[in-house]
Image (cartoon, rainbow over all chains, first blue to last red; front, side, top):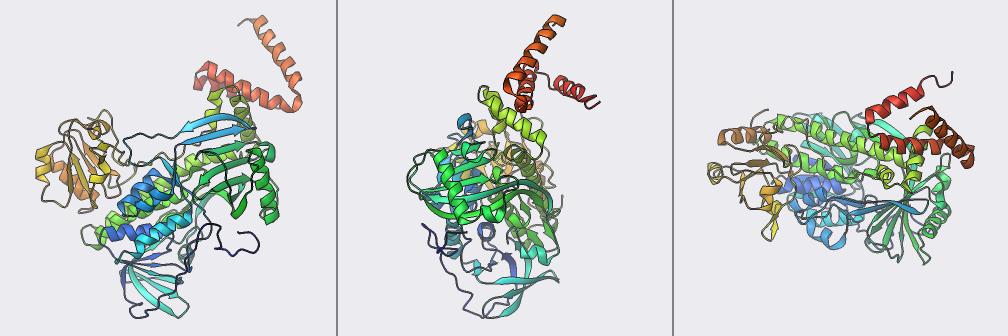
Length: 535
Length: 59
């Protein structure tokens, strides 16, 4: 929502583009290998990740511009790795605000300061703040310059039916209603996913009690990019407030509504202005400010039982809705897109058996359930659901004023990268290792010369090895081979010996590792993980 | 800890509860539980003491 007198996309700092429906009407009904429904951050990332593998797609969006409002603002390191791998990272690094630190306050007194893990070995910082419309704009710049992606705006999907070896979409745009077949469909059409509804599927899970208003304001306010959480502040007794800095002097303020507080009244402009003013007084901001945009949400943990329905894969919010405390909504969706893209590409190109796709749902749904577990902990602390949780939360906060150990209970424990444990295409770990990242984990960073290990990885699978003869055995393969030195940061990070090898997937997760690698077992693991043979 | 010690704790806690007011009794006791749990340092023992405290409530 925006203040009276301003249209939905009339921002204080961002010019929303206007996209026409397709003007060239020839070929609209031509069959496509992949149709992607929803040109938000997840759909665009999927299209770009497919294009990187050489697979063309048609991208549909019912709107004529980007999503209104800044919505998701915290983008994690893993997501920057993805943006880099799809060739879209440069504008993000110029615009976004990196951060590593959070502070929690109880009744005005600081009770916790936490640092997210970071080091010079990592190319990107643990977290960046940037408004969603910039995320969409920067991805759109990459999509628009990619000839393998055809985007159709103002094009609504009104039916999805199964057809022989694919799905038949019915599309309505301002000029006509037409049908188009696609071999595969990626539904990236958001929390209220029309595709999900058309398929008769529903999200399952829990709704939490807490409701939050999220408001963006513009102000000159002198505070570093540190996430602030205010528990039980004077301006909102019993409630919780979150404050984040964004580019362009924009600040995100989330504040919890009281039990029984009327939702419609709470989101009226006057009430939002009054509530924001009270928060600003609390944090000592006395200067002018302008209201940019606001919205309301409640904390939910909801997901589809299966992220696949025939030829349709659900990616992003269409498959799962998580509470914002974990900042895993957008970040999880981007990982979905990155995960399905390389698998689908290999199947489409005839390089993998179709059963490779069966690994998508367990891997990504597993990641969502992991987020649920963490987010539920956070949600219980932010908005205690029962008197028992409420008492212990209040006791912990009160104790934290004098005993820092209790403040750790307020640590949101955001963004531990997820390890694909229950996956048919991730190998068992080699017990000979005494450290390093395990199969299924996302590859950590390591410095290499003037750059980073990540810069050496290929678009497909990569074999990291310290053994020149193993490297030679695979030189004629479609694997990217990276021969590493034992005296390197990478060797330390990987807990490597002279014959160690790691097999890295296109989505930067570790497929398998061997302390003393032999060619035969590496080849076998590669065939299974890349889908050349069924597991 | 002998009976005299326990009695001293009993007295001190009773007086402390009276100084904070009845509405703050739960939070004081919950804080105390967290502090003592940390001193005990044995999660299983603390769990079993919590369960013992639960027994017979409301009888």
